[in-house]
Length: 437
Image (cartoon, rainbow, N blue to C red; front, side):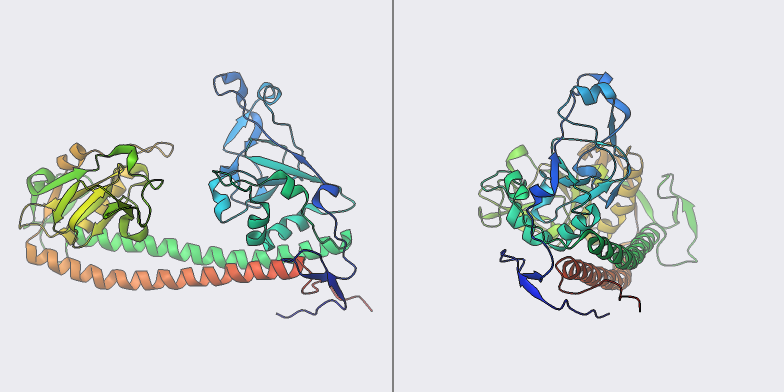
């Protein structure tokens, strides 16, 4: 898809904006919008909460249109806070949140709402600026605005109000703004649907991947093997020749002991001599380094997150030497020649799925070492464990390849979306419909 350029351009006076169409205005944001903040009613007074007024906070800013919020307040709560009731059609923006490291969440409310203190609302002069155009303008300049609006020297990510208010926003006339916004709504809608299709594919691949793992480590690879009841609900029937043993008879486990010291705030990539592992999937569990160690380890282990609500289980191959664990994880390793570490890395995953299903969504319960030791697990012959691992390594590679392809497609589509928005809202391309003869 190609579009013409405008006939003439002029300097915007802002280095990162460059040139804009000659007939566009260059007002500061404070001249076309007014700003409203938010606040939090006292949590100690139940009369202020669970009312009819959606109370929008950064966690609600996951879509371009806000139709409600996770929490709500009452009229009395509104009166006893720094927030105001904002009618529909305002531009809502997050001004204080960790997400501002990489993204400026922005949306338009479809219903009346109140805000918490980490949000701002912009009310535009309807004769000068269309809310939808401004939303697209921010999306098209996300990276530049993150830098331009950043509060200097702040210990948390936040937007400085004075920088926000002084922002120069190139504006065509209102009819042209609406034409650009309508064009972008159509085109980004098409792109968003393609992205959604890829995300659905990734979710399906994830489900199939887990089903392959679960079947292989609980039923084996021989579809004709005689089966017996395991006596364990999540295992169901297992091959007749598999043993059933308690985890504590076959494994040892250890937890991190240094509490709050071993957090990302203290563990950087070059802050010490010994690796620190956590129950996270990023970087194979490596959170950073530390100048102390807790364990002197000489074999493979499986790393567990102890937070079951977001529980992750991952392997640490060849975990030799001295290391520490963060406070939210533990490592488990076999003490018996009957058990292959990599097999139990897979075998424990269905168990964790069962545990997570038992936890209410609003909770993140702790997964204790005693819990792990108490479980009954299946023990196939060691050669069969090796065969299952070899099968899974081959099959899961196929799923991982397809998932990576889907992610690359999403990345490409999102880059295209941002580029299209940026080009349209800065006048690099003219997306107005051609004049009728």
